[in-house]
Image (cartoon, rainbow, N blue to C red; front, side):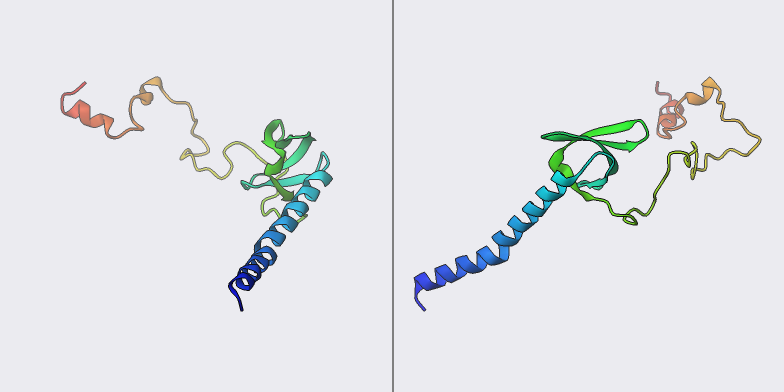
Length: 135
């Protein structure tokens, strides 16, 4: 086989193994984005789930939770979410502050703190200055 034949063969293999599949993926992504309508559940390329509120020429507004919206570039939407894709499907009424968090307080204790508790207790190294006679 001649050198020119090898170059043509390599270009053909490169086209069918790399360029053509990439173009198909781009066309499929474009179709997916164009078919989206407000109310659709979507996943962004950064892994954020949300509900599509508005979609324009270049941007889309996604509602992350009730009252919290985020504007993204339209092409940041990776795909529409199918039922069952999300592990933790949360409804807006299921969250109460403090869920899953142990604040260390008992049922009969209150979370009210004295102003003197706001010293530098969160920063253990700050006590070193006091012990050494520093400011």
